[in-house]
Image (cartoon, rainbow, N blue to C red; front, side):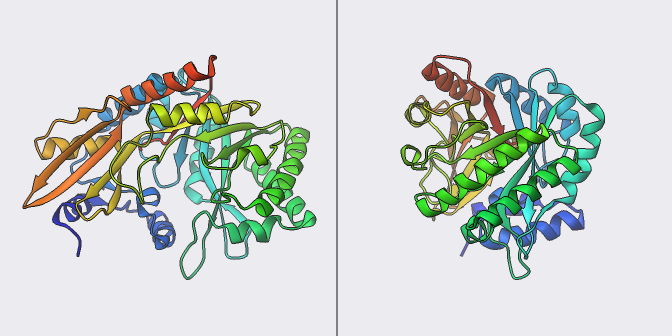
Length: 358
């Protein structure tokens, strides 16, 4: 049975009212990752001005060159971008999913936002393709069976690359971002992915499209021999989160290890995450945004403490005999993390933020 504190968080949150968003969320949360796939805002949220200020501060503090905007977290996006437009140059719109037949499609919210942002022409727009498989009986996130279906043959990989190139070009994006995850140590699938990537690199160059490729921190990099051409972006978060005990999404030791591991890659950048997680006393985990975390602390009259090892904020509180723990990142945290990465690299290094309204 759920603890009272966790119920309190859920009761204070609400889904976005648009039916299209709600339908997508119901599908995508069927796999148990609601924290990363739902629009969950506190009923008593901070004002829009505070949200804009917080996000702008995070972007500036991290010295970020790019940021993700998800189809479920677009509230105030254009206002935030107007405030921060001089501070970064790339927007990655998340994104393009896959239907039951394994064909990519762009979420309607992303399409609509894309049309509005294209009128401004202030940023380089990337379309993020993620291996989330939207199925009638419940969606599968980061599905590797889908990747085998798409990439296991030469003709299949070529057809998939062509579909991505056509979709990106027709929708008017400047670049492509590939976010295919959970390949882990599956070297057979990595071989398929590398072949697909080489095809996509050639096609993107021919069409004048930029290319970014996201990499999970635990990949067997020394065995992959990834090709030159794309901008590679390493995910530097979730040191703690789902499946772990309380702690920060990253700390100094973790970031240094990633900077060292991926230093051999050409054109490499790093992605940092704002927000954090709430743990109840049974170990259940709930994703929480930066402003939600601050709001919850204020409501329970506790003062967050800044962790020396990570720069992240944390607090524990009790109510009705139950304990809740929250760890999260704010602008100061992101500034520290980006400085660690750039200091270890010994040069200016591109930093991305996952995600707007996170």
